[in-house]
Length: 212
Figure 1 (spheres, one colour):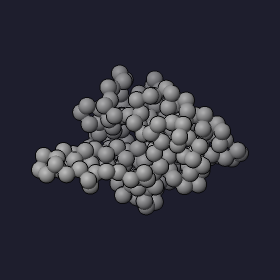
Figure 2 (tube, one colour; figure 1 turned 30 degrees about the vertical axis):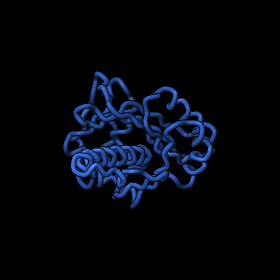
Figure 3 (cartoon, one colour; figure 1 turned 135 degrees about the vertical axis):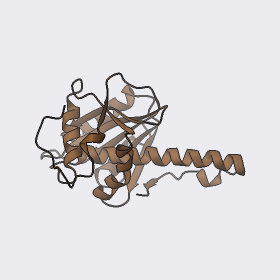
């Protein structure tokens, strides 16, 4: 149950009624990690890493999260540990600007699947872009009574964009946008192959840009 600070009754992007939880970990067909890397040696900023999967019935499942104040070297170590813990991840999504660019440069040849992402638009517009996944009950979080960190995640989600922190929401929108875009490309790929056999428009560049 969500029993922390009061949340806004109106004006929030995400609504409490659409927050669903899993108790038995679902099987997933695709898995990625998503990182918000606003690290500082001192201060209040958090680094967040999340593991998201897509189930066989096309639900978006949050499987794990790390959130802490980290230095540059600690952030690298956290990404390495998650990559080792979840070897099935097909991509590790890192925003290609500021701190993220330096991390990508270090890990790009070390960890398979390091994916530079350049989201378009502001954080609030990116949240609006994936809100329909929530209102369609397609997003499922771990049970907060078992995974206590989910309480803070849900609190930030419900207070966004007025929340004190937005690092967890930012990592989430990055993952959900990338996974949904990939699913759409695969669906269009199947249609194109059935109709023409032409795959040229689906060959991806080395840099991913989320069109939000």
